Image (tube, rainbow, N blue to C red; front, side):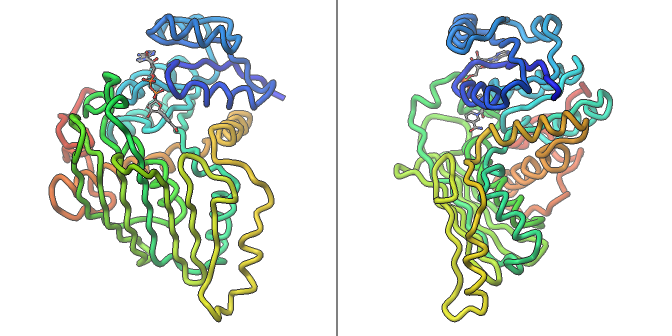
Length: 363
Ligand SMILES: NC(=O)c1ccc[n+]([C@@H]2O[C@H](COP(=O)([O-])OP(=O)(O)OC[C@H]3O[C@@H](n4cnc5c(N)ncnc54)[C@H](O)[C@@H]3O)[C@@H](O)[C@H]2O)c1
């Protein structure tokens, strides 16, 4: 068994999920250090989790520790620079969502992967629960028939204190609103399961809270297969729920959950008198019951490191959701339908989710 030296950059709210995931891999990872510009946070996390070293500067940490893998879990607007630096330092990166601020940044990270031979995988924990994996296998095997109609609803609630953290609520530092920060989880699962999208129409607005970014968006999506989708993301819904409903030719598959799911959250059904009624039992039988969490994704990332091959949710598998969200925002802010593949280097939405940035120097 290979053991890798891992370090974390960022000791904020999400750090415990990453430390749990690292510990769940047993001897495969040696958690050597944590870096955060806030020394008190570093000290507290080191003490609570028995981590030997902390740094208040990520560059110093990379030089001193020379990790094989780095978890980048800082505010979204910092992901790009830190991820690039980690790649240059010879580490693989497991970065929180959203991976970066724009398609332009994504393409620069892809170029850095090619130069360094190291890979970046972005967190997409909803794909990795056993029910999600099982459903993906059924769809890929064609068992459920063609996709027809999809509903993807992230109806969450974020009160004022959530936005009082200085980096939240601003395009420059959060890189977008509820659509890219919250809706990204279920949207990524939806697009991964339902196949290639072709066109999106959308509206987005800030309907409450003193913030710059959106807290509600609604999108209508055409898929290459002919299927149609409807996506709603909200951060102002008092009774919170995540709801995914996928209608295939032969069955309806639904997931009703909040931040995590187990098999219990999923339901398969079909129409009265369906000739596929007998298949329902088979479709609903899921061998394992693991939650979609960072743990499962990290274990698979280490398998990829062992084989030195591209990990899941990297490359095209990570670009898909960023391109879709950039297109959703462009559709919302221009009032025009946006086709997949049309946001390129001559388009302001290539450089920022609100279309407001200018091209930057290559990093
Ligand atoms: N996957 C999930 O379910 C999930 C849940 C919550 C947050 N997130 C993502 O995790 C990221 C962090 O969110 P959070 O809620 O933990 O944020 P947070 O504000 O609680 O913590 C961020 C930490 O990063 C530190 N930091 C800022 N800039 C730094 C730098 N340059 N170098 C080192 N440290 C730096 C801050 O001091 C702070 O301790 C965001 O991208 C967010 O979208 C993901």
